Amino acid sequence: MEAKVCSLDEDGDLILTRRKKKSQDYFVISVQHNITSSIPRVGLQVWRAELVLADFVLHMMYKSSMLHGIVAIELGAGTGLVGMLLARVAKAVFITDHGDEVLQNCSENIHINAGVLSPKACVYVRELDWNNSWPPQVLENSLSQQRYGWSISEIEEIQRASLLVAADVIYSDDLTDAFFSLLKLLMCENPEKVLYLALEKRYNFTVDNFDVVANGYSHFCSYLKDDEEDDIENECSPSFVGKRINLTEIPQYVVEYDRGKDVEIWQIKYEKRKP
Image 1: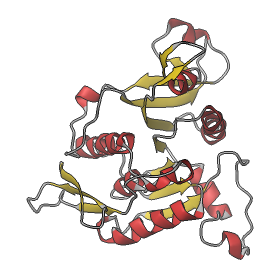
Image 2: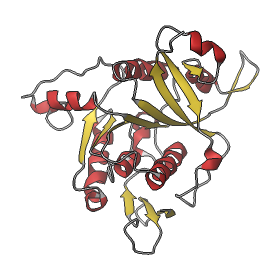
Image 3: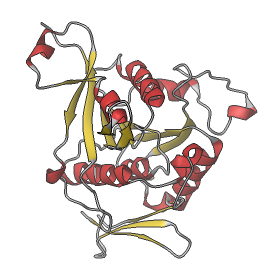
Image 4: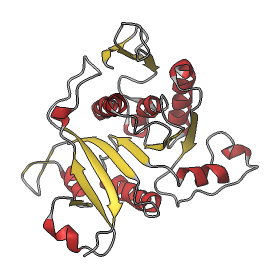
């Protein structure tokens, strides 16, 4: 199972293809996206970390059936690419982001690719603002929340999710704080939940440090304990435990993009270790 092409069509839309030999594993996903974007519209662009996470998900799908029949959540989904890949095998996928324009684009991408998603998968596009409380307010008869709002049954379903994925959501300290606050609420009741987070280190020159530093990355790491550290065995309170994935072991299914040296994928759990 491999993706052979990652190219833009004449309209600027990203086309991901896997091997041309027609087989049970062959499929094409087309993604509407912007070539560039402003900060408020970053969710309309495909970022490098999203493509690396797509490689990782494809590899998990290729090497085992552990993703079959699961309930999954994509946080800060952007174009919804990774969520759509999961919808090939999952029971249900919640593709979440914030803002009508981004959510509308996700919905259109799902419509475009409906033929390659599993007919048994339930795919939801839902509004999820990390700065708001969880669970979100449910107003069953509200027309304003009818399309991207949550129902009680969906909130109950999302609590059963075993997999969370996110790509390129670490670029603002305030956003990172809100992200981990939401993660704690989503993961605290189910220690089996696991998050796979892809990010790209972004470096800036600061006068305070008089050096080029990746402050956003450092802030992200401050939330994590290394699962190989000895002292974590003595932790009594729950904490986020992180393990960096070795990307050299993940084939590049999506071609024609450069992974670079600053993209990472982290496996993150929220767990309590017994002393």
